[in-house]
Length: 183
Length: 183
Ligand SMILES: [Mg+2]
Ligand SMILES: [Mg+2]
Picture 1 (tube, rainbow over the protein chains, first blue to last red):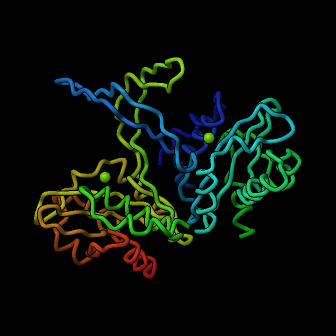
Picture 2: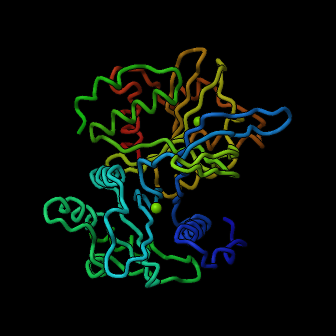
Picture 3: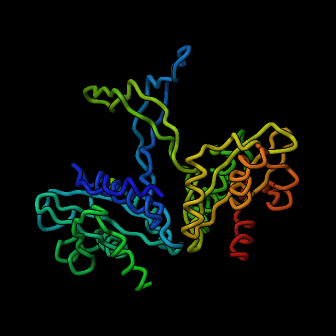
């Protein structure tokens, strides 16, 4: 609906999250998909209610999210994904994930959702979409074979390289389409 | 997977949100659906990082959510809903919704999501699931016919009355099944 805004989305931001948020804004404005970043959960301890102005949170703490960063709907499909950056050059460390995020991904896959990770290799300036299936296999194997990371080669073979474009900045739905084809 | 937890979910809580959260915990533990409440978005202004302890948020403000309270996946279907309580006895005031929540619902419907509202008439102690379609019709008509609320009678005719049960506390997916049947 907001066609006049289209050009505003074409700037590559500072972080992977900025770029994904801009891409989601583009997809939303063009009625392609409704995907939002979930707010960080915060435990509020103390709030002041000053007269004639907004409530002020005076003491609060960050909580660990029990799900992934993003979810939403794309043409009838539930999408659920996590965005992660690494400075590593040859593999992606599994220590970037928490057990509860993995549990959440498994639960989403079980419910027939489209679950994946967008991984940025910051040093290489390379970006990949990796279906959760591969991640979950590596996760479950780490206690058997001891491997604590996913090799970049595996990510390149089983995932999709994402190229930055003008609009959207990260056209990740193109590769979600490929995941849907293989459902 | 957490079968031993099943009995823990059977208590009716103080608020509609508590009861929905307990129902979602039940559905999740039994691999029925993955539905979560979105955290309230908060604008953080000042954070202290004390030595040897967790970061403390010292100044922050509540922000208006741009989406609905709950979303997730149920057997391949994207669900998206808002929970609302009213003390009214004969109708539900549209002023309970913000324009951006309505826009979000419209966008979800356009993407073929299952969008609805769970409305509690607190004084009557009655609970209904109302498909967004009805809400959106009333919303769009309010500037034409001037009606600023949805009559309870309409909610009873076009929605579904929810009965509290032991597990889950609010078995709303039973009526989501009916919405899916009519897709
Ligand atoms: Mg992340
Ligand atoms: Mg609400």
